[in-house]
Image (cartoon, rainbow, N blue to C red; front, side):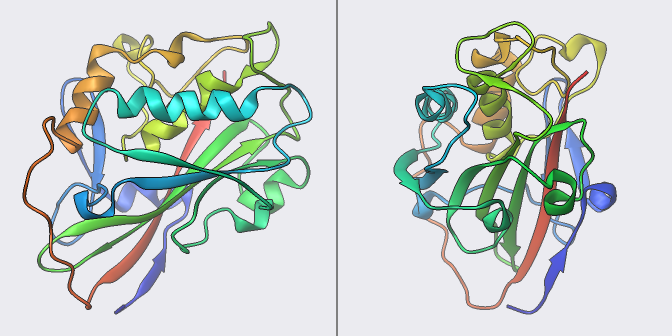
Length: 239
């Protein structure tokens, strides 16, 4: 690797973000190519911290459902790798292990984000003159400042609703904030008890299919040893 660059949330604007009428995605800063998983890397395995959240049951199933919802929309292929003993400090490591983990204390210390941030998806990617590809995505959920539910309870954050949004970041799609985006899974705000992000809007699907066309292209990218590793962070704020 030539360089390793950590780009924090407040510097995300350095990315060149291309916009379609209904979805947005980041590109690498040198060649302007969209960030995406290689076909040769699929299926991409994701894992869940085995402690989950103490607030509810079925959170593991809810997260799996969120990944499956996106997979059903495009050629992206996820596979569930089960649970593991992960801690918040494992979040945002560029180690090829794509984890989902709850943070029950010291949220701001661990993530650098304020209490109003419900969850963050971090991603790492590499690029060279031939291609740009994702290498790692991790999702961390704020268990210190929010109470979670797997059944859409009022006053709580619904796990599948939130995980569906964060999994969209793991593809990598960006937050949307325009008034016409309010019904989309990638809309960047939500109300407690909300469940509508569990189902994708047509524009969410179009974004996923732009990055991962269906049917899957037959060409397999060829990796080269010289590349630049870059990190970016996506955050999701509640109202």
